[in-house]
Length: 368
Image (cartoon, rainbow, N blue to C red; front, side, top):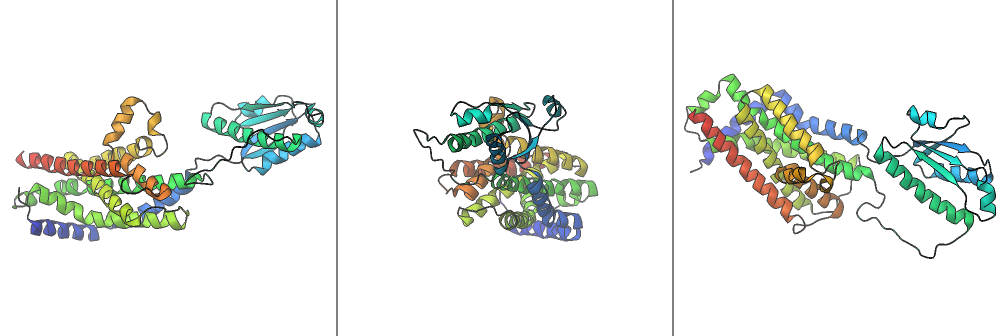
């Protein structure tokens, strides 16, 4: 099947004129990416700090007060002294996530170099917060044990966190948000193009010409590549300047892979538009396909390796999953081409299949 680039160019110019006249598309392309990354960037926080913890100090000694001070100094907890009789009541009312009951002989036992007891109560209804809380407390207690008992461990473990030394959750979150926002924006913009033509009745005029389905699809995608690329650039600048996300990889390699991801999502949007033929339906399908997999099945929040087998297999057909690996790999680990060959190959394969599927489906619609 021959391809006439002049007809592709004419279709692209026609679409550009539509975009310029459509203020909604322009606003969505330039303003929505910044608004989304600012909103979600500040709202989504995977780390826990300032966790309310009740302190029932039955010892009331200098050693117990030192324990509380060290607990507060870590920044993870907000200790509040409790003087009532039922310490479980505030936890049951969701007023506190944890409680520490210091034994009355705590100070005396430390002075005599005997084991001192502290009972920790945690709200297990939030498993993630409970797990992180006990991890934080264990680290603090280990340090306190060394300080108060003056002892030294028989061995020393030196831990070094690679790629994210401060374990800053924003680095992990924002690099993933780029995948979600760029993908959703690209799918939404093209999902409305062909369905808009059908609703306005202008598709019949196109079908009466010699232009072919592949030329319509490529001509429709071309202007949105530029618009989506500008949106991706705005998201990138916001992530680097406002949130201070480091970039350790090859900038040219990143933007080449970003280009392939954008084309993949635009092709998916075109396929949705060809199938739905109605703008409202196209937008609904785009939100479901563009947002839900990005948030739940791409590895953005939930690790793919912890998912059931069916969903792990399902993620193989999602471009968001592969670009998530690319984005975090290039941003944080400084991964190169050989490290990201598989994600890049899967993105290219998805892009090719989506364009072919859109053309095949479009050809079927023309024959009908």
